[in-house]
Length: 276
Image (tube, rainbow, N blue to C red; front, side):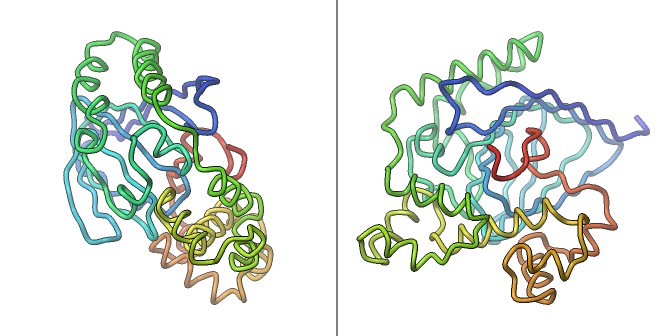
């Protein structure tokens, strides 16, 4: 094979999974050699089940692993991946509030790292890959995934209402709200609010807001001058914007504009950040 080919199939999220699952896609990719990618930080949590390939992943924590089925928790930085040859998989993108409902563990248990799916959700990591490989069509595969997700969420408790409210406020503001003022408005102490949020989501409210702000700025990249982009998303100046892009994307804004489009989860599911 001489060319790099990518096929993506989007699946409509089941109504009962909305708010928990942002999107589901099927991916088939073939390449003549190794494919290296740098995935920017973002607010969706990928849960990936492959059946004929393995992906090597370097997380911001410094941990490296090679996985067939895995979940990548919220990351305070970019992630590097490598694969060779062909890969076929289903990718489920969880919302930060959906992690506990699907996996049965709070977000802090998977944040900042990549975890083998069988270690955190045996019901998904055990035989699901084999069943997906045996299915003849993407439609059949998506039905299997829906059934597995609905069983898990049906047995779980609803999300913490305080954390849900905080997350929606942070997301709606594009990460620009002052977290201290937001916490104070709840009537609880800043420490209590932070600990409760971090336990469920995996990042502190401040760290989560910084990722939200970066994600919105990345989605807006190329639509206005960089100085205006910085102001629009609440950065002190263009230099501040550039530093944050280095932190969360491992590249400058100019470097990203000159490179091929960044393969973000929101691009994969066909939804802009903030509209999930």
